Length: 168
Image 1 (cartoon, rainbow, N blue to C red):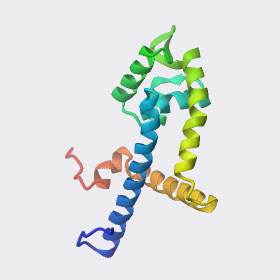
Image 2: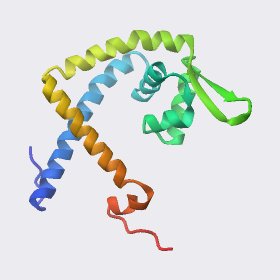
Image 3: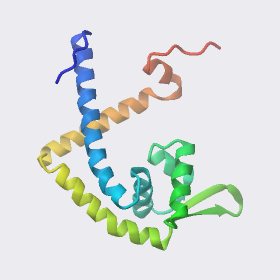
């Protein structure tokens, strides 16, 4: 259903595309979330496990950036994974502020088992899209994501969301 917003044609197209994108993402997230919930994981926890599995141990802050987590959120997610003995934090002896997150043997076993099942679920959910459509969707999502990131640089963030810049 197209938006009923009475703005310009461009605004209606942007809003309509945004609503469709959010609904599609929400549907995928909800469906995949059921799978994760059945295995006592959140999407954030699964993202951390997958990232560490494929990219190896990394600094907690870098992990948060890769997953678009705030500092507090990444700490909370890692705390919960640590309680389940799925990850461990290793402090750098030369700089105790530098913490690297590693998968534990239990975490490695879990992600090796669950990732193929998760991917199978994702494949079923996205199976109605042809290869060409998947490529197009990926390219459009990347283009939009990069454009948003560019607009959200500190000097342009306020303008991108319609706020006025703070007075000096």
